[in-house]
Amino acid sequence: MRAKNVTLSHGECLDIVARQFGLKDWNVLSAQAKRYEATAQRRASQLKGWAFLSEHPDVYDHGADDDPIAPGGGTAVIRLDPLLGPRRYPEHSRAFGCYTQTISAVPFHGKRVEISGNLRCQDVSHGATLWARVDGMPGHTLSFDNLKDASEGWLFGTMSWIDRKIVLDVPADAISLHYGFFLKGKGALWAADFKVEEALAEAQLTSSPPVQHRRAPAWLTPTNLQFSDVIDVPAIAS
Image (cartoon, rainbow, N blue to C red; front, side):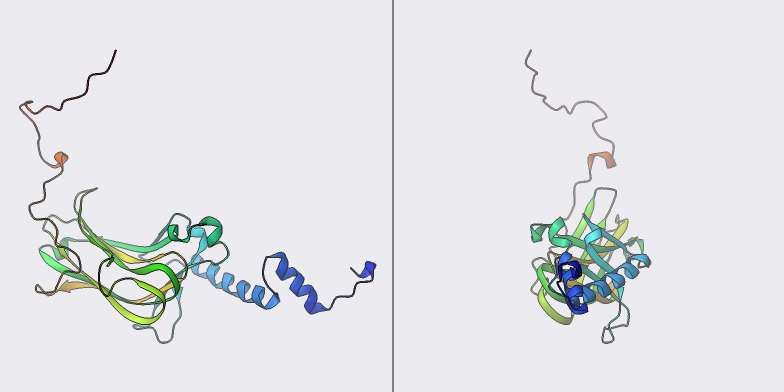
């Protein structure tokens, strides 16, 4: 530029670099760079005992975070990157990031379990909250809830710290308990002070009760040992 007798100040040069990245000016690029550094540090130190699940985990900033007013002290965050996210998810409703943890359901057999936590969110477009599931044998879900239909369920927009909880029955044949929190669409979700504990017997379920006398999958018990039960198969045209 100097060879063409075009004089640029140092600040103007910085803004040109920022625009090469598709950003408004150097201040925006500088802020983004600091956030990416924090994102890299979070990804390098995974949350012990938790797994992050997403179709495209590379477009999420997730992991431990600091919030001096967070209940219980420690905080975890799920944030869809505002630049990379739209490239992977042109339709924001398809974006989904989730933290999950799995434990044995045996200590809760025949009881009700309460999964609770404190959440706050920022600019959430399609919802965020807790979720929980009780499983029996592989592929056999006994109960599930993500507060979709609850009056105190999904969070949208920007909200300060708020309680959410899920109460589920744990049948005697339950094997595993899965729980966590998720972000759907754009925005950011923070979680703190998670608890998994036995609920009072009279505690109200947050989802519909599981169907009583569920029919066991065919592979759980001996079936058709006398070969009398047949399935009609359409004849193949010759």
